[in-house]
Length: 422
Image 1 (cartoon, rainbow, N blue to C red):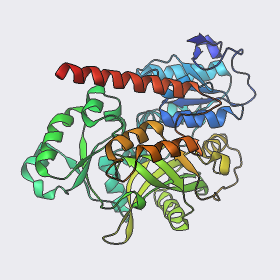
Image 2: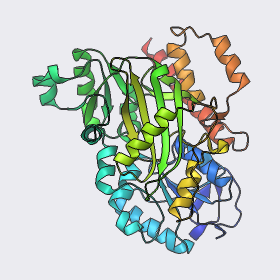
Image 3: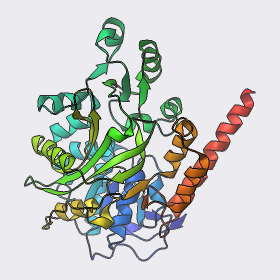
Image 4: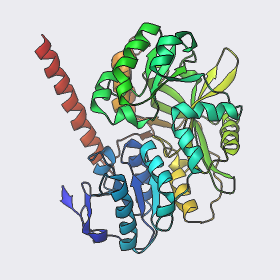
């Protein structure tokens, strides 16, 4: 790891040499959370000459390896982190733009917005509404109250499972109340499986088993599963400013997901769907929402209605992949937070692809054969290439190398564990 002189000589960089620290030409960006979505944001902003700093309480996350990210050695304690951020802003001599990049950090900014507002620029929804939307338990109530179609979602408790099983929608998707809970706990991650964020449940006995194993990691919700394959799965990414104008938006089809039909996307393809662009914008208007948002839609063939599976109150995993095609949401966020005039950008081409090698490898291993895919065709398309990638970049290769090392380490660990069981 190579040291980097930066603001207060407190930043480290794994991906690029020291150049003397913050230049002061543009307000820097500070990302809270360094997961995969942060890598995309850092590359978009860094290539425009904006200094990008990163903080993550977990350490050694994928974006920390990027040549565009200077990782700050910040405390994980919430109160101490507020003081640290205020001190960082004072040393910078400017008001950086703050990017909360995970549900945990969205809630952190919400709780401490008053203290941070005099030192940072950021845009975010109102505190109460953000809290309700971030929580999978309360998001259904908010959406239903505004007559926004959404699958039936209920909070799971011992009482619900034991006394009112008939009220649980089956089959269902089992989720944590907050998106980060399972991802940040190694034991939970091992139980649900690498790459999984939700669990598909089709019978009551299985639901009881999963609840017993996972309820210790936080509150759980059961969401009605809408039948249909990935052709019915769409993702809307958009940005609404304080004046109520949609400044950027795009829609993608989730061509493949892991787990199949309900998980995170492994392959996206842009589609210009005016109906979903309008639906996404209308939802943000009804919520009186401010800032970046991602909305997962699934078309329900039973009643011919697009339903909202969930809403992310932040920049997501792949909101940036059309930045080179006119829909540059990170730059919109940056400039709007600084109070600059931003012209709306709503036009983009069909057929632009985004790809996650690690997740799609999991999809191929588990679902490829049953979906009629062959390893030969899968490898041929991989060699042919995609338009953009979750991790890989010729100009910023270190994160991809780090991801391959992690993938190899996990494979060896799994092999060793299986060998012991024989």
